[in-house]
Image 1 (cartoon, rainbow, N blue to C red):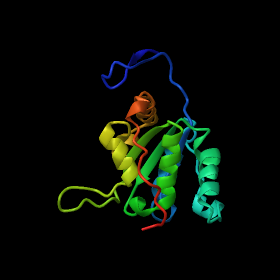
Image 2: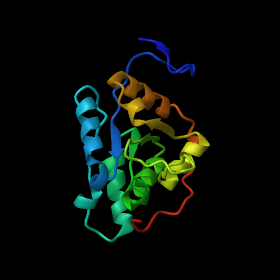
Image 3: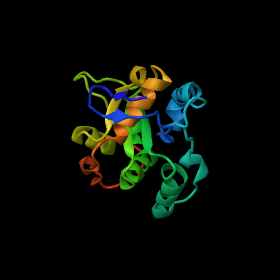
Length: 179
């Protein structure tokens, strides 16, 4: 199957099954993760769920970062960040995004319906994700965009994987505390 993705001129010969790490605030957005996982887990190899807050009990930042790289990000090609009300305040989400960018994997941010829009029409996005949306490296999609169907989700993942790695901005210091 050959075709153009989103008019970008990107051609693929066959659908590629990608492994995708999903980063989200477990305390606030678990229901969205569950919905996403149920919709796409069987059809595509796109979901990995590892709650670092439950699994890693360590104050050693370098140890936690190594666990993120080895247990979450390494086997994937893309990280999808589900962005809800408190996502921008979570240190492990920042660290998961940092590890993703350190490994030059692709990045997609998803605006959940629970994400409040302020009076200026803006939303609170994790700063490192915002940096990469601004450079054009990360995609920023709505919940409706990403969950339309498995084929559409797969195309977004392919577009994200085609982004120029020189657009990565991972210069921000790591978040040390939850907000």
